[in-house]
Length: 97
Image 1 (cartoon, rainbow, N blue to C red):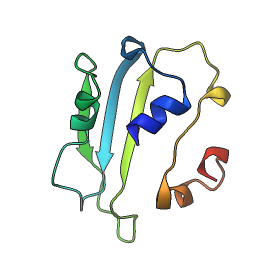
Image 2: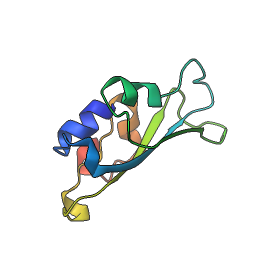
Image 3: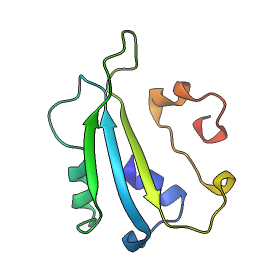
Image 4: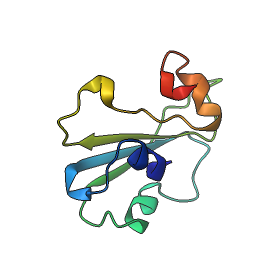
């Protein structure tokens, strides 16, 4: 998911990434999503993992990524990535189709 977010937005220089916050649905407990960022070379990027609140009926097995990125791009030019079932979270966003 993180690699697709980086690819879709043309982010290859991790020095442009200010920080990343990862959240997971409460049912995901076996590893920290930030480990994936470290595995692809984000050794200097501040990373934080947290759990979403347990809202009854919410989507299970869901990871969200909030990437703080130093860019000149306008908000409308940034690609928000939704994979698999997460696409139904934002039917109003073109990249979720």
